Amino acid sequence: MACPFATGVVIISFLISIVVVRSNFWGRKVLDQLAFLPHAIPGIVMGLALLWIFLQVDKLGVGLFGSLTSLIIAFLIGYISYGTRVMNAAVLQIHKDLEEAAKISGAPQWRVFLRIFFPLLMPAFIGVWIWTVLHVVRAAGKPLILTDGAENEVLAVVIWNMWDEGYTEAVGAIGTMLMLALLFMTIGIRMLGFGRGAHIQEAK
Image 1 (cartoon, rainbow, N blue to C red):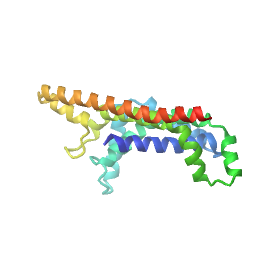
Image 2: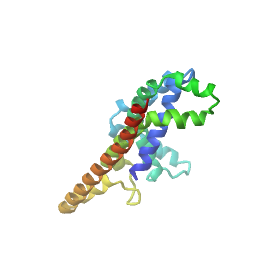
Image 3: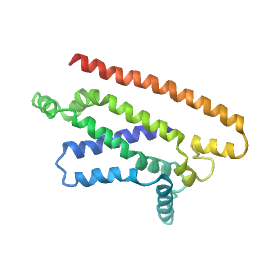
Image 4: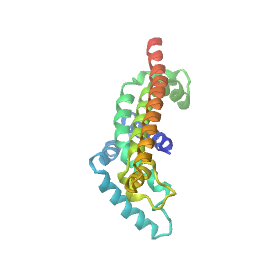
């Protein structure tokens, strides 16, 4: 469940950074500040604010509170700050001459992204993705507030409830397996992403 959240954070962070760093959009500075704003808000406070918003929206018959969509929105807002900081720095390191040379050669925009942006930004994509997964898996503040029933409980909430009910041994076993799974996943993805980035730098 953490993987879709992390992928969404990577995609949205990249799009925001492209607008902020590369475009001439008049509101790019405001967009950058709005993307960083959630970092200054405590998780519990944001969870309560989103709870109030979702309850107001539900008065229109939407049924947002307690759904998986509410958790997706909460996590995307919460982790977009870090994602945009990393992406801004990564996009700034790619010189515009590379894009201009590709466009002069007749490459369309999608090919510029696949052949230039994507390979060079792979370490940033992988870094933001891993960071988000690690935080989403252990996050319990906003999910505890926004969860309604067992259908959309994240693992941190399940562990919390099991601990509260006295299943100490089971919590310890789940926690150990979780740490090992995240460790192997992190090492494997870092080797894949950063190893590819090193090969690109050597080729240059």
